Length: 317
Length: 275
Ligand SMILES: Nc1ncnc2c1ncn2[C@@H]1O[C@H](COP(=O)(O)OP(=O)(O)O)[C@@H](O)[C@H]1O
Ligand SMILES: [Mg+2]
Image (tube, rainbow over all chains, first blue to last red; front, side, top):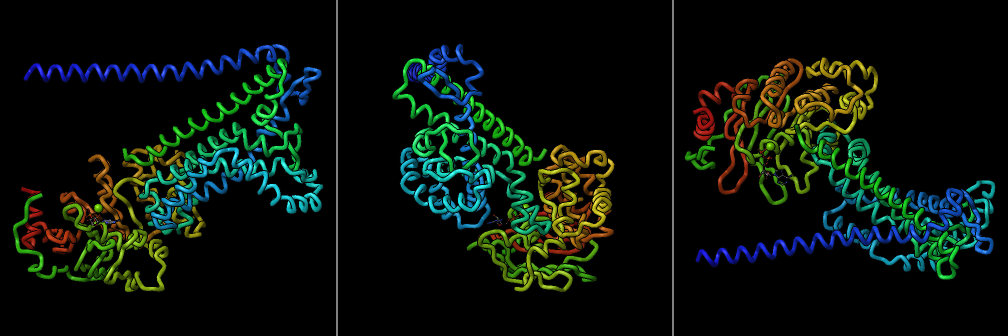
Protein backbone atom coordinates (compact mmCIF):
# COMPACT_ATOMS: atom_id res chain seq x y z
CA UNK A 1 0.00 0.00 0.00
CA UNK A 2 2.65 2.44 1.10
CA UNK A 3 4.67 1.48 -1.93
CA UNK A 4 1.88 2.15 -4.41
CA UNK A 5 1.33 5.62 -3.02
CA UNK A 6 5.03 6.32 -3.24
CA UNK A 7 5.29 5.24 -6.88
CA UNK A 8 2.27 7.18 -8.03
CA UNK A 9 3.62 10.33 -6.43
CA UNK A 10 6.99 9.81 -8.02
CA UNK A 11 5.32 9.32 -11.37
CA UNK A 12 3.33 12.51 -10.95
CA UNK A 13 6.42 14.39 -9.95
CA UNK A 14 8.26 13.19 -13.05
CA UNK A 15 5.36 14.23 -15.29
CA UNK A 16 5.16 17.53 -13.48
CA UNK A 17 8.81 18.41 -13.90
CA UNK A 18 8.88 17.20 -17.50
CA UNK A 19 5.90 19.42 -18.24
CA UNK A 20 7.58 22.34 -16.58
CA UNK A 21 10.69 21.84 -18.65
CA UNK A 22 8.74 21.67 -21.88
CA UNK A 23 6.95 24.89 -21.02
CA UNK A 24 10.17 26.66 -20.15
CA UNK A 25 11.83 25.47 -23.33
CA UNK A 26 8.91 26.64 -25.45
CA UNK A 27 8.85 29.99 -23.72
CA UNK A 28 12.57 30.45 -24.24
CA UNK A 29 12.25 29.39 -27.87
CA UNK A 30 9.56 32.01 -28.41
CA UNK A 31 11.77 34.71 -26.97
CA UNK A 32 14.76 33.49 -28.96
CA UNK A 33 12.72 33.46 -32.14
CA UNK A 34 11.61 37.04 -31.54
CA UNK A 35 15.20 38.05 -30.88
CA UNK A 36 16.37 36.25 -33.98
CA UNK A 37 13.85 38.03 -36.19
CA UNK A 38 14.89 41.42 -34.85
CA UNK A 39 18.54 40.48 -35.28
CA UNK A 40 18.06 39.33 -38.87
CA UNK A 41 16.23 42.48 -39.82
CA UNK A 42 18.85 44.58 -38.09
CA UNK A 43 21.61 42.65 -39.83
CA UNK A 44 20.15 43.16 -43.28
CA UNK A 45 19.35 46.78 -42.57
CA UNK A 46 22.91 47.56 -41.45
CA UNK A 47 24.20 48.65 -44.90
CA UNK A 48 21.32 51.10 -45.25
CA UNK A 49 21.67 52.30 -41.65
CA UNK A 50 25.38 53.00 -42.25
CA UNK A 51 24.77 54.69 -45.54
CA UNK A 52 21.72 56.87 -44.79
CA UNK A 53 21.63 57.09 -41.00
CA UNK A 54 19.17 59.61 -39.60
CA UNK A 55 18.52 61.24 -42.99
CA UNK A 56 16.54 58.10 -43.85
CA UNK A 57 13.82 59.41 -41.56
CA UNK A 58 13.80 62.94 -42.96
CA UNK A 59 14.17 62.43 -46.69
CA UNK A 60 11.23 62.04 -49.03
CA UNK A 61 12.96 60.28 -51.90
CA UNK A 62 12.56 56.65 -52.82
CA UNK A 63 14.70 56.27 -55.89
CA UNK A 64 16.21 52.81 -56.44
CA UNK A 65 17.95 53.99 -59.64
CA UNK A 66 20.05 56.54 -57.71
CA UNK A 67 20.04 54.54 -54.50
CA UNK A 68 18.43 57.45 -52.61
CA UNK A 69 16.03 56.35 -49.94
CA UNK A 70 13.94 58.08 -47.28
CA UNK A 71 10.67 57.28 -45.55
CA UNK A 72 9.40 60.62 -44.30
CA UNK A 73 6.18 60.46 -46.38
CA UNK A 74 5.60 56.88 -45.23
CA UNK A 75 6.04 57.83 -41.59
CA UNK A 76 3.69 60.74 -42.11
CA UNK A 77 1.18 58.54 -43.94
CA UNK A 78 1.37 55.93 -41.20
CA UNK A 79 0.68 58.48 -38.48
CA UNK A 80 -1.93 60.39 -40.41
CA UNK A 81 -3.98 57.37 -41.41
CA UNK A 82 -3.61 55.84 -37.94
CA UNK A 83 -4.71 59.02 -36.17
CA UNK A 84 -7.70 59.40 -38.47
CA UNK A 85 -8.55 55.74 -38.01
CA UNK A 86 -8.26 56.23 -34.29
CA UNK A 87 -10.73 59.10 -34.40
CA UNK A 88 -13.20 56.90 -36.26
CA UNK A 89 -12.61 53.88 -34.03
CA UNK A 90 -12.47 55.96 -30.86
CA UNK A 91 -15.82 57.63 -31.43
CA UNK A 92 -17.50 54.45 -32.60
CA UNK A 93 -15.75 52.11 -30.18
CA UNK A 94 -16.29 54.12 -27.01
CA UNK A 95 -19.94 54.74 -27.94
CA UNK A 96 -20.43 51.05 -28.56
CA UNK A 97 -18.71 50.24 -25.28
CA UNK A 98 -20.97 52.65 -23.38
CA UNK A 99 -23.99 51.26 -25.12
CA UNK A 100 -23.00 47.71 -24.24
CA UNK A 101 -22.21 48.28 -20.57
CA UNK A 102 -24.57 50.87 -19.12
CA UNK A 103 -27.81 48.93 -18.97
CA UNK A 104 -29.21 50.23 -22.23
CA UNK A 105 -29.93 46.76 -23.54
CA UNK A 106 -31.16 43.45 -22.18
CA UNK A 107 -28.09 41.43 -21.17
CA UNK A 108 -28.56 38.86 -23.92
CA UNK A 109 -28.56 41.53 -26.58
CA UNK A 110 -25.48 43.04 -24.92
CA UNK A 111 -23.73 39.69 -25.17
CA UNK A 112 -24.78 39.18 -28.77
CA UNK A 113 -23.59 42.60 -29.93
CA UNK A 114 -20.35 42.30 -28.02
CA UNK A 115 -19.68 39.03 -29.83
CA UNK A 116 -20.50 40.58 -33.19
CA UNK A 117 -18.04 43.43 -32.57
CA UNK A 118 -15.36 40.98 -31.51
CA UNK A 119 -15.98 38.89 -34.61
CA UNK A 120 -15.05 41.89 -36.74
CA UNK A 121 -11.50 41.08 -35.65
CA UNK A 122 -11.78 37.69 -37.30
CA UNK A 123 -12.26 39.11 -40.80
CA UNK A 124 -8.96 38.79 -42.70
CA UNK A 125 -7.21 42.00 -43.61
CA UNK A 126 -7.37 41.28 -47.33
CA UNK A 127 -11.15 41.03 -47.14
CA UNK A 128 -11.27 44.49 -45.60
CA UNK A 129 -9.01 45.63 -48.43
CA UNK A 130 -11.35 44.23 -51.05
CA UNK A 131 -14.39 45.68 -49.28
CA UNK A 132 -12.67 49.05 -49.19
CA UNK A 133 -11.67 48.88 -52.82
CA UNK A 134 -14.93 47.68 -54.31
CA UNK A 135 -17.39 49.22 -51.90
CA UNK A 136 -16.07 52.08 -49.79
CA UNK A 137 -14.18 53.91 -52.54
CA UNK A 138 -17.10 53.97 -55.02
CA UNK A 139 -19.40 55.00 -52.20
CA UNK A 140 -17.10 57.88 -51.22
CA UNK A 141 -16.53 59.06 -54.76
CA UNK A 142 -19.49 61.45 -55.26
CA UNK A 143 -19.26 62.83 -51.73
CA UNK A 144 -15.48 63.30 -51.92
CA UNK A 145 -15.77 64.96 -55.33
CA UNK A 146 -18.32 67.37 -53.93
CA UNK A 147 -16.08 68.15 -50.94
CA UNK A 148 -13.19 68.99 -53.24
CA UNK A 149 -15.33 71.18 -55.48
CA UNK A 150 -16.88 73.14 -52.64
CA UNK A 151 -14.01 73.28 -50.18
CA UNK A 152 -10.81 72.99 -52.15
CA UNK A 153 -9.44 75.93 -50.12
CA UNK A 154 -9.52 73.73 -47.00
CA UNK A 155 -6.18 71.85 -46.83
CA UNK A 156 -8.00 68.60 -46.04
CA UNK A 157 -9.83 68.66 -49.37
CA UNK A 158 -7.24 70.40 -51.50
CA UNK A 159 -6.62 67.63 -54.04
CA UNK A 160 -9.09 65.80 -56.26
CA UNK A 161 -10.28 62.39 -55.19
CA UNK A 162 -8.51 59.73 -57.22
CA UNK A 163 -9.71 56.58 -55.49
CA UNK A 164 -7.29 54.82 -53.15
CA UNK A 165 -5.96 57.29 -50.61
CA UNK A 166 -6.03 58.49 -47.05
CA UNK A 167 -9.79 58.83 -46.59
CA UNK A 168 -10.84 55.31 -47.62
CA UNK A 169 -7.75 53.85 -45.97
CA UNK A 170 -8.48 55.60 -42.67
CA UNK A 171 -12.17 54.66 -42.72
CA UNK A 172 -11.47 50.99 -43.35
CA UNK A 173 -8.60 51.01 -40.89
CA UNK A 174 -10.94 52.54 -38.31
CA UNK A 175 -13.38 49.66 -38.74
CA UNK A 176 -10.50 47.21 -38.51
CA UNK A 177 -9.28 48.48 -35.16
CA UNK A 178 -12.80 48.97 -33.83
CA UNK A 179 -12.87 45.54 -32.10
CA UNK A 180 -9.67 46.33 -30.21
CA UNK A 181 -10.84 49.74 -29.10
CA UNK A 182 -14.39 48.64 -28.33
CA UNK A 183 -13.56 45.53 -26.39
CA UNK A 184 -10.82 47.05 -24.23
CA UNK A 185 -13.02 50.09 -23.56
CA UNK A 186 -15.86 47.75 -22.71
CA UNK A 187 -13.69 45.95 -20.16
CA UNK A 188 -12.64 49.27 -18.68
CA UNK A 189 -16.24 50.49 -18.41
CA UNK A 190 -17.60 47.31 -16.95
CA UNK A 191 -14.82 47.29 -14.36
CA UNK A 192 -16.22 50.51 -12.86
CA UNK A 193 -17.76 49.36 -9.57
CA UNK A 194 -21.53 49.60 -9.70
CA UNK A 195 -21.63 51.17 -6.25
CA UNK A 196 -19.92 54.24 -7.73
CA UNK A 197 -22.76 54.54 -10.19
CA UNK A 198 -25.28 54.02 -7.40
CA UNK A 199 -23.56 56.67 -5.33
CA UNK A 200 -23.84 59.14 -8.20
CA UNK A 201 -27.48 58.22 -8.76
CA UNK A 202 -28.08 58.58 -5.05
CA UNK A 203 -26.94 62.19 -5.37
CA UNK A 204 -29.57 62.76 -8.03
CA UNK A 205 -27.47 62.33 -11.15
CA UNK A 206 -29.28 61.32 -14.32
CA UNK A 207 -28.09 58.31 -16.27
CA UNK A 208 -26.06 60.51 -18.64
CA UNK A 209 -24.58 62.53 -15.83
CA UNK A 210 -23.48 59.27 -14.24
CA UNK A 211 -21.87 58.16 -17.50
CA UNK A 212 -20.16 61.46 -18.26
CA UNK A 213 -19.08 62.51 -14.82
CA UNK A 214 -18.39 59.25 -13.04
CA UNK A 215 -18.16 56.22 -15.29
CA UNK A 216 -16.05 57.67 -18.10
CA UNK A 217 -13.57 59.49 -15.83
CA UNK A 218 -13.16 56.35 -13.72
CA UNK A 219 -12.53 54.26 -16.82
CA UNK A 220 -10.50 56.95 -18.58
CA UNK A 221 -7.14 55.27 -18.32
CA UNK A 222 -8.51 51.96 -19.53
CA UNK A 223 -10.09 53.78 -22.47
CA UNK A 224 -6.77 55.53 -23.06
CA UNK A 225 -5.09 52.15 -23.18
CA UNK A 226 -7.72 50.93 -25.65
CA UNK A 227 -6.94 53.89 -27.91
CA UNK A 228 -3.19 53.41 -27.73
CA UNK A 229 -3.42 49.69 -28.40
CA UNK A 230 -5.79 50.38 -31.29
CA UNK A 231 -3.27 52.90 -32.57
CA UNK A 232 -0.56 50.24 -32.33
CA UNK A 233 -2.67 47.90 -34.41
CA UNK A 234 -3.35 50.61 -36.97
CA UNK A 235 0.35 51.43 -37.35
CA UNK A 236 1.25 47.84 -38.22
CA UNK A 237 -1.74 47.07 -40.41
CA UNK A 238 -0.50 46.08 -43.85
CA UNK A 239 -2.63 44.27 -46.37
CA UNK A 240 -5.68 46.50 -46.40
CA UNK A 241 -3.50 49.58 -46.58
CA UNK A 242 -1.34 48.18 -49.35
CA UNK A 243 -4.61 47.91 -51.29
CA UNK A 244 -6.24 51.18 -50.18
CA UNK A 245 -3.58 53.77 -49.41
CA UNK A 246 -2.75 54.51 -53.03
CA UNK A 247 0.95 53.58 -52.99
CA UNK A 248 2.13 57.08 -53.63
CA UNK A 249 4.53 58.84 -51.28
CA UNK A 250 3.32 62.32 -50.52
CA UNK A 251 3.55 64.70 -47.65
CA UNK A 252 0.04 66.07 -47.67
CA UNK A 253 -2.80 67.00 -45.36
CA UNK A 254 -5.38 66.27 -48.04
CA UNK A 255 -7.69 63.42 -47.10
CA UNK A 256 -8.49 62.83 -50.74
CA UNK A 257 -4.92 62.34 -51.89
CA UNK A 258 -3.26 58.97 -52.40
CA UNK A 259 -0.62 58.21 -49.83
CA UNK A 260 1.54 55.46 -48.39
CA UNK A 261 2.37 53.89 -45.06
CA UNK A 262 5.48 52.09 -43.89
CA UNK A 263 3.77 48.72 -43.86
CA UNK A 264 2.18 49.26 -47.27
CA UNK A 265 5.50 50.43 -48.71
CA UNK A 266 7.13 47.20 -47.48
CA UNK A 267 4.40 45.00 -48.87
CA UNK A 268 4.27 46.73 -52.23
CA UNK A 269 8.01 47.12 -52.76
CA UNK A 270 9.51 43.84 -51.66
CA UNK A 271 8.71 41.64 -54.62
CA UNK A 272 10.76 43.78 -57.00
CA UNK A 273 13.51 45.06 -54.70
CA UNK A 274 17.20 44.78 -55.60
CA UNK A 275 19.90 44.40 -52.85
CA UNK A 276 20.30 48.06 -51.94
CA UNK A 277 16.56 48.63 -51.91
CA UNK A 278 16.04 45.48 -49.83
CA UNK A 279 18.40 46.84 -47.21
CA UNK A 280 16.52 50.15 -47.20
CA UNK A 281 13.27 48.24 -46.79
CA UNK A 282 14.71 46.38 -43.81
CA UNK A 283 15.58 49.75 -42.31
CA UNK A 284 12.00 50.86 -42.90
CA UNK A 285 10.84 47.65 -41.23
CA UNK A 286 12.93 48.50 -38.16
CA UNK A 287 11.36 51.95 -38.01
CA UNK A 288 7.93 50.36 -38.25
CA UNK A 289 8.72 47.87 -35.52
CA UNK A 290 10.00 50.60 -33.22
CA UNK A 291 6.84 52.66 -33.74
CA UNK A 292 4.48 49.79 -33.21
CA UNK A 293 6.39 48.38 -30.27
CA UNK A 294 6.45 51.70 -28.46
CA UNK A 295 2.71 52.20 -29.04
CA UNK A 296 2.00 48.74 -27.67
CA UNK A 297 4.28 49.04 -24.66
CA UNK A 298 2.80 52.44 -23.88
CA UNK A 299 -0.72 50.97 -24.19
CA UNK A 300 0.05 48.03 -21.94
CA UNK A 301 1.61 50.30 -19.34
CA UNK A 302 -1.38 52.62 -19.13
CA UNK A 303 -3.70 49.64 -19.07
CA UNK A 304 -1.84 48.24 -16.08
CA UNK A 305 -1.89 51.59 -14.35
CA UNK A 306 -5.61 51.88 -15.05
CA UNK A 307 -6.16 48.54 -13.37
CA UNK A 308 -4.14 49.65 -10.42
CA UNK A 309 -6.21 52.78 -10.15
CA UNK A 310 -9.47 50.86 -10.43
CA UNK A 311 -8.26 48.52 -7.74
CA UNK A 312 -7.89 51.54 -5.50
CA UNK A 313 -11.45 52.62 -6.22
CA UNK A 314 -12.65 49.07 -5.76
CA UNK A 315 -10.99 48.15 -2.49
CA UNK A 316 -11.81 49.96 0.72
CA UNK A 317 -8.81 50.49 2.91
CA UNK B 1 -26.90 33.90 14.76
CA UNK B 2 -29.08 32.22 17.38
CA UNK B 3 -31.71 29.80 16.14
CA UNK B 4 -35.12 31.23 16.66
CA UNK B 5 -37.75 28.93 18.00
CA UNK B 6 -40.66 31.25 18.45
CA UNK B 7 -43.98 31.22 16.63
CA UNK B 8 -44.03 30.95 12.83
CA UNK B 9 -44.20 34.34 11.16
CA UNK B 10 -47.91 34.33 10.29
CA UNK B 11 -48.69 34.24 14.01
CA UNK B 12 -46.80 37.43 14.62
CA UNK B 13 -48.81 40.40 15.70
CA UNK B 14 -48.54 43.52 13.60
CA UNK B 15 -45.46 45.43 14.73
CA UNK B 16 -45.93 48.10 17.29
CA UNK B 17 -44.93 51.50 16.10
CA UNK B 18 -43.67 54.27 18.31
CA UNK B 19 -45.83 57.24 19.01
CA UNK B 20 -45.93 59.22 15.82
CA UNK B 21 -44.98 62.77 16.35
CA UNK B 22 -43.84 64.02 13.03
CA UNK B 23 -43.14 61.40 10.38
CA UNK B 24 -41.01 62.56 7.45
CA UNK B 25 -41.15 59.26 5.58
CA UNK B 26 -44.14 56.98 5.64
CA UNK B 27 -43.13 53.62 4.35
CA UNK B 28 -45.71 50.98 3.63
CA UNK B 29 -44.31 47.95 1.85
CA UNK B 30 -46.89 45.26 1.18
CA UNK B 31 -44.87 43.27 -1.34
CA UNK B 32 -41.51 44.03 -2.83
CA UNK B 33 -40.16 41.85 -5.60
CA UNK B 34 -36.85 41.39 -7.35
CA UNK B 35 -38.10 39.54 -10.42
CA UNK B 36 -40.07 36.58 -9.05
CA UNK B 37 -38.47 36.76 -5.64
CA UNK B 38 -40.57 38.30 -2.90
CA UNK B 39 -37.74 40.04 -1.06
CA UNK B 40 -39.71 42.02 1.53
CA UNK B 41 -43.31 41.73 2.64
CA UNK B 42 -45.70 43.41 5.06
CA UNK B 43 -43.41 46.00 6.48
CA UNK B 44 -44.72 49.40 7.39
CA UNK B 45 -43.15 52.06 9.46
CA UNK B 46 -42.79 55.79 9.79
CA UNK B 47 -39.46 57.52 10.00
CA UNK B 48 -39.56 60.33 12.54
CA UNK B 49 -38.24 63.69 11.55
CA UNK B 50 -35.03 64.81 13.21
CA UNK B 51 -34.33 61.40 14.74
CA UNK B 52 -31.99 58.54 14.05
CA UNK B 53 -33.71 55.34 13.08
CA UNK B 54 -31.70 52.12 12.92
CA UNK B 55 -32.51 48.93 11.00
CA UNK B 56 -31.11 45.77 12.48
CA UNK B 57 -31.49 42.12 11.55
CA UNK B 58 -29.63 39.20 10.03
CA UNK B 59 -28.07 39.71 6.63
CA UNK B 60 -30.37 39.11 3.70
CA UNK B 61 -33.48 40.17 5.61
CA UNK B 62 -34.02 43.18 3.38
CA UNK B 63 -32.64 46.08 5.39
CA UNK B 64 -30.77 47.57 2.45
CA UNK B 65 -33.73 46.90 0.22
CA UNK B 66 -36.08 48.88 2.47
CA UNK B 67 -33.55 51.68 2.73
CA UNK B 68 -33.14 51.84 -1.03
CA UNK B 69 -36.89 52.11 -1.40
CA UNK B 70 -36.80 55.40 0.39
CA UNK B 71 -34.82 57.13 -2.35
CA UNK B 72 -36.01 54.96 -5.23
CA UNK B 73 -32.54 53.58 -5.80
CA UNK B 74 -34.09 50.15 -6.35
CA UNK B 75 -35.60 51.48 -9.56
CA UNK B 76 -32.32 50.79 -11.32
CA UNK B 77 -32.48 47.10 -10.43
CA UNK B 78 -33.95 45.02 -13.21
CA UNK B 79 -37.13 43.28 -12.14
CA UNK B 80 -37.74 45.46 -9.10
CA UNK B 81 -41.43 45.92 -8.25
CA UNK B 82 -43.10 47.49 -5.26
CA UNK B 83 -46.66 47.04 -4.02
CA UNK B 84 -47.20 49.66 -1.41
CA UNK B 85 -46.63 53.30 -0.80
CA UNK B 86 -43.69 55.39 0.26
CA UNK B 87 -44.34 59.02 1.00
CA UNK B 88 -41.96 61.74 1.89
CA UNK B 89 -43.30 64.83 3.61
CA UNK B 90 -46.75 63.60 2.65
CA UNK B 91 -46.00 63.19 -1.04
CA UNK B 92 -46.04 59.73 -2.63
CA UNK B 93 -42.58 59.33 -4.14
CA UNK B 94 -43.65 56.39 -6.28
CA UNK B 95 -46.51 58.35 -7.89
CA UNK B 96 -46.55 58.19 -11.67
CA UNK B 97 -45.61 61.84 -12.14
CA UNK B 98 -42.60 61.75 -9.81
CA UNK B 99 -39.14 61.54 -11.33
CA UNK B 100 -36.89 59.25 -9.27
CA UNK B 101 -33.95 61.53 -10.02
CA UNK B 102 -35.64 64.45 -8.27
CA UNK B 103 -36.49 62.25 -5.29
CA UNK B 104 -32.83 61.37 -4.88
CA UNK B 105 -31.86 65.01 -4.81
CA UNK B 106 -33.77 65.44 -1.56
CA UNK B 107 -32.36 62.35 0.10
CA UNK B 108 -28.68 61.72 0.66
CA UNK B 109 -27.19 58.27 0.76
CA UNK B 110 -24.00 56.80 2.18
CA UNK B 111 -22.95 53.27 1.33
CA UNK B 112 -21.27 50.38 3.05
CA UNK B 113 -17.94 51.01 1.39
CA UNK B 114 -16.65 54.51 0.74
CA UNK B 115 -17.50 55.57 -2.80
CA UNK B 116 -15.25 58.52 -3.62
CA UNK B 117 -15.39 59.50 -7.27
CA UNK B 118 -12.17 59.68 -9.25
CA UNK B 119 -11.80 63.44 -8.86
CA UNK B 120 -10.54 65.92 -6.31
CA UNK B 121 -11.83 66.17 -2.75
CA UNK B 122 -13.46 69.48 -3.66
CA UNK B 123 -15.14 68.17 -6.79
CA UNK B 124 -16.49 65.20 -4.87
CA UNK B 125 -18.25 67.44 -2.38
CA UNK B 126 -19.42 69.82 -5.09
CA UNK B 127 -20.79 66.98 -7.22
CA UNK B 128 -24.35 67.12 -5.95
CA UNK B 129 -24.47 70.91 -6.01
CA UNK B 130 -23.20 71.03 -9.58
CA UNK B 131 -25.69 68.52 -10.93
CA UNK B 132 -28.39 70.50 -9.18
CA UNK B 133 -27.19 73.51 -11.23
CA UNK B 134 -26.79 75.13 -7.85
CA UNK B 135 -23.44 76.79 -8.19
CA UNK B 136 -23.59 80.02 -6.25
CA UNK B 137 -21.22 80.23 -3.33
CA UNK B 138 -19.81 76.82 -4.12
CA UNK B 139 -16.60 77.27 -2.11
CA UNK B 140 -18.47 78.27 0.99
CA UNK B 141 -20.91 75.42 0.83
CA UNK B 142 -18.23 72.84 0.14
CA UNK B 143 -16.43 74.13 3.20
CA UNK B 144 -19.61 73.98 5.28
CA UNK B 145 -20.29 70.40 4.20
CA UNK B 146 -16.75 69.32 5.00
CA UNK B 147 -16.99 71.02 8.40
CA UNK B 148 -20.29 69.32 9.17
CA UNK B 149 -18.67 66.02 8.27
CA UNK B 150 -15.77 66.77 10.64
CA UNK B 151 -13.32 66.50 7.78
CA UNK B 152 -12.44 70.10 7.05
CA UNK B 153 -9.36 70.35 9.26
CA UNK B 154 -7.87 67.24 7.72
CA UNK B 155 -8.41 68.15 4.09
CA UNK B 156 -8.44 71.93 3.90
CA UNK B 157 -4.92 71.91 2.46
CA UNK B 158 -5.57 69.19 -0.06
CA UNK B 159 -8.90 70.11 -1.59
CA UNK B 160 -7.42 69.77 -5.06
CA UNK B 161 -5.88 66.38 -4.33
CA UNK B 162 -7.49 63.19 -5.51
CA UNK B 163 -10.13 61.88 -3.14
CA UNK B 164 -8.55 58.46 -3.47
CA UNK B 165 -5.53 59.68 -1.53
CA UNK B 166 -7.61 59.89 1.68
CA UNK B 167 -7.77 57.08 4.21
CA UNK B 168 -10.82 54.80 4.36
CA UNK B 169 -12.35 56.65 7.30
CA UNK B 170 -11.71 60.02 5.66
CA UNK B 171 -13.21 58.75 2.41
CA UNK B 172 -16.36 57.74 4.25
CA UNK B 173 -16.63 61.15 5.91
CA UNK B 174 -16.05 62.67 2.48
CA UNK B 175 -19.01 60.69 1.21
CA UNK B 176 -21.08 62.00 4.11
CA UNK B 177 -19.97 65.54 3.28
CA UNK B 178 -20.92 64.93 -0.35
CA UNK B 179 -24.32 63.62 0.68
CA UNK B 180 -25.13 66.55 2.98
CA UNK B 181 -23.70 69.28 0.74
CA UNK B 182 -27.07 69.65 -0.99
CA UNK B 183 -28.76 69.77 2.42
CA UNK B 184 -31.12 66.85 1.87
CA UNK B 185 -33.95 66.35 4.32
CA UNK B 186 -33.03 62.76 4.99
CA UNK B 187 -29.70 60.93 5.12
CA UNK B 188 -29.74 57.20 4.43
CA UNK B 189 -26.73 55.23 5.61
CA UNK B 190 -26.28 51.59 4.70
CA UNK B 191 -23.82 50.01 7.13
CA UNK B 192 -21.60 53.09 6.85
CA UNK B 193 -19.00 51.78 9.31
CA UNK B 194 -18.68 48.16 8.38
CA UNK B 195 -15.55 48.73 6.28
CA UNK B 196 -13.92 50.98 8.87
CA UNK B 197 -11.66 50.56 11.88
CA UNK B 198 -13.04 51.19 15.41
CA UNK B 199 -11.64 54.70 15.66
CA UNK B 200 -13.13 55.85 12.35
CA UNK B 201 -16.35 54.13 13.36
CA UNK B 202 -16.48 56.08 16.58
CA UNK B 203 -15.91 59.35 14.75
CA UNK B 204 -18.73 58.62 12.35
CA UNK B 205 -21.06 57.72 15.20
CA UNK B 206 -20.29 61.04 16.90
CA UNK B 207 -20.88 62.72 13.61
CA UNK B 208 -24.29 61.09 13.23
CA UNK B 209 -25.40 62.33 16.63
CA UNK B 210 -24.18 65.79 15.64
CA UNK B 211 -25.95 65.67 12.29
CA UNK B 212 -29.24 64.69 13.86
CA UNK B 213 -29.70 68.33 14.78
CA UNK B 214 -30.22 69.21 11.13
CA UNK B 215 -31.05 65.96 9.38
CA UNK B 216 -33.21 62.90 9.71
CA UNK B 217 -30.98 59.85 9.61
CA UNK B 218 -31.86 56.29 8.74
CA UNK B 219 -29.06 53.83 9.30
CA UNK B 220 -28.71 50.14 8.59
CA UNK B 221 -26.27 48.42 10.88
CA UNK B 222 -25.27 44.92 11.81
CA UNK B 223 -23.66 46.27 14.94
CA UNK B 224 -26.26 46.25 17.71
CA UNK B 225 -24.04 48.28 20.01
CA UNK B 226 -23.95 50.93 17.36
CA UNK B 227 -27.72 50.98 17.13
CA UNK B 228 -27.92 51.31 20.91
CA UNK B 229 -25.41 54.10 20.95
CA UNK B 230 -26.83 56.30 18.24
CA UNK B 231 -30.41 55.41 17.39
CA UNK B 232 -33.58 56.92 18.82
CA UNK B 233 -35.72 54.28 17.17
CA UNK B 234 -34.87 50.77 16.09
CA UNK B 235 -36.54 48.48 13.60
CA UNK B 236 -35.84 44.77 13.69
CA UNK B 237 -36.28 42.77 10.49
CA UNK B 238 -36.13 39.06 10.07
CA UNK B 239 -36.36 36.46 7.29
CA UNK B 240 -39.26 34.08 6.83
CA UNK B 241 -37.71 30.61 6.96
CA UNK B 242 -39.72 29.12 4.10
CA UNK B 243 -40.15 31.93 1.62
CA UNK B 244 -36.85 33.70 2.41
CA UNK B 245 -38.78 36.96 2.37
CA UNK B 246 -37.79 39.61 4.86
CA UNK B 247 -40.29 41.45 6.99
CA UNK B 248 -40.43 43.93 9.81
CA UNK B 249 -40.81 42.14 13.15
CA UNK B 250 -40.76 45.00 15.58
CA UNK B 251 -40.24 48.70 15.61
CA UNK B 252 -39.97 50.96 18.59
CA UNK B 253 -37.83 53.18 20.73
CA UNK B 254 -34.33 51.80 20.92
CA UNK B 255 -34.44 51.29 24.66
CA UNK B 256 -37.63 49.35 24.44
CA UNK B 257 -36.40 47.14 21.59
CA UNK B 258 -33.23 46.21 23.41
CA UNK B 259 -34.55 46.03 26.98
CA UNK B 260 -38.17 44.99 26.67
CA UNK B 261 -38.76 43.61 23.20
CA UNK B 262 -42.37 42.71 22.61
CA UNK B 263 -41.59 39.94 20.14
CA UNK B 264 -39.93 36.66 20.95
CA UNK B 265 -37.84 36.86 17.73
CA UNK B 266 -36.51 40.25 18.69
CA UNK B 267 -35.70 39.10 22.19
CA UNK B 268 -33.75 36.11 20.94
CA UNK B 269 -31.88 38.10 18.31
CA UNK B 270 -30.95 40.87 20.69
CA UNK B 271 -30.10 38.50 23.58
CA UNK B 272 -28.11 36.26 21.28
CA UNK B 273 -25.87 39.21 20.61
CA UNK B 274 -25.54 40.40 24.18
CA UNK B 275 -25.34 37.24 26.24
N1 LIG C 1 -30.38 43.66 -6.94
C1 LIG C 1 -30.95 42.54 -6.44
N2 LIG C 1 -31.46 41.61 -7.28
C2 LIG C 1 -32.00 40.48 -6.78
N3 LIG C 1 -32.10 40.17 -5.50
C3 LIG C 1 -31.61 41.07 -4.62
C4 LIG C 1 -31.00 42.28 -5.03
N4 LIG C 1 -30.60 42.97 -3.95
C5 LIG C 1 -30.94 42.19 -2.89
N5 LIG C 1 -31.54 41.05 -3.27
C6 LIG C 1 -32.08 40.01 -2.39
O1 LIG C 1 -33.01 40.59 -1.52
C7 LIG C 1 -32.83 40.09 -0.21
C8 LIG C 1 -32.57 41.21 0.74
O2 LIG C 1 -31.32 41.78 0.43
P1 LIG C 1 -30.74 43.04 1.20
O3 LIG C 1 -31.78 44.09 1.22
O4 LIG C 1 -29.45 43.38 0.57
O5 LIG C 1 -30.51 42.45 2.66
P2 LIG C 1 -29.67 43.06 3.85
O6 LIG C 1 -29.27 44.43 3.50
O7 LIG C 1 -30.61 43.00 5.02
O8 LIG C 1 -28.53 42.15 4.07
C9 LIG C 1 -31.71 39.08 -0.26
O9 LIG C 1 -32.27 37.78 -0.34
C10 LIG C 1 -31.00 39.42 -1.53
O10 LIG C 1 -30.47 38.25 -2.11
MG1 LIG D 1 -27.30 45.24 3.22
